[in-house]
Length: 203
Image (cartoon, rainbow, N blue to C red; front, side, top):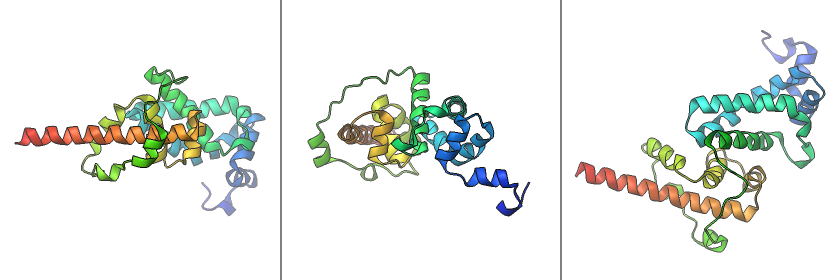
């Protein structure tokens, strides 16, 4: 294995340093080897999103593989003019995890007023200690309706912007805000209930 980029064959070095858009274009033209640097760059983000959404390492591994197999066969569907590659890949991952969960993502109702969400948006930091309550947090996230889980995982855990989350979920920016508000509130409520139950059990 080469010890540095300078020791690599020129063609391989060019693939590794090429932009996502250029590599995706090569894949679309039949250059399957160009998939390797894309996989190396983005598999971690795709896997983490899938794991956080599903709570299953096995599902996350399968979804990650499915995403890049899909990219290999459908790279021509990616339009670099509409945004970076990673949000596009996360959108594909979202579709795959929804499919595994039997979720119909075409339409979901929202029950939170956007103005209320912006005026009273709670924070997760007020409700939990991430390290001590990790298992309870995972359970609370897993219990969220899928459309709320989408935005919470994307924005809070995968660190995507509101705009990226909106593009991935195929909804308006204000819808992301309202869903995120509701998701945070539901998680906080679940964690408080869990904490109260543990206190009663100890008492």
